[in-house]
Length: 346
Image (cartoon, rainbow, N blue to C red; front, side, top):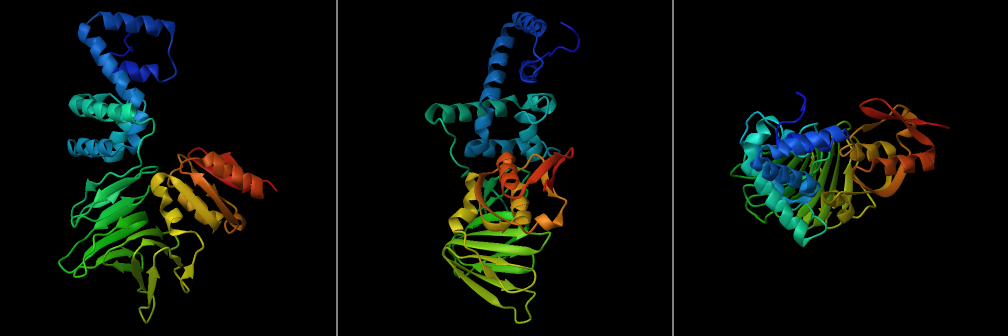
């Protein structure tokens, strides 16, 4: 073998999946396996981890195990572990990750169980503990669910940030940016309060979705069950808007709230990675799409931003979005390196 050949089972698996396999490497692998009886077992385990990694995305147990991995290394973020473990970077099994073999093996058995009993991974229903004072930041494409100190649950959309700030008087959550779905434990003596920009949403027990478009300071609230009160600190009278089940309202930075036509359960369908739009502007659609896009879709022509767009898309399927924009409005994409630049071809 040459000096640059892999020296561990995990590195061999990474090399096999890098698209540069050759007869020479195959021979080198066979020779490496023959050199030690333990190598075959290690190689089989590493291969199994790689083969089932795509099922981890929607596994509750896997998300919990990944959270535990993060806690084993203070210098590693959760997104970093996901990338290192499951192939987003060139070698997901190198370095510090190899020292965590027991945790990796535990993940294998979790996912093998899922693969054996279901040919389709379940939706993301996991609930990682989120303590008072904690923040939950999700990466592009990452959806995570958390259980709060009172037993309420929050599911955080991709590229979003929530912060827990409970007090004796109220259960307070700050939606710093992005989107989150809340399932609140009923408690009439201790209101549940979500602060998003200049808006405050107060409930005692319900299920609702809040989206905070921080660049434009607009807030969208969708009530799936129960009711909520939305107050506006920008209003001199501190006006309150009462919303009931299936109400979906947009609260712009300026002007009165506007009721939207889209059903509340479709607004929150991002939890199963489905995105629905009903007459939304292209700008707002791209704001949601970019939470899952490997390359951000960027408009350079402001005249295109307010064009309406309706449809249903799978999160991360930017090709479908680009096809719709091209078909409807002649908008085409140019590769700009770390982004896709959208311009009109007409």
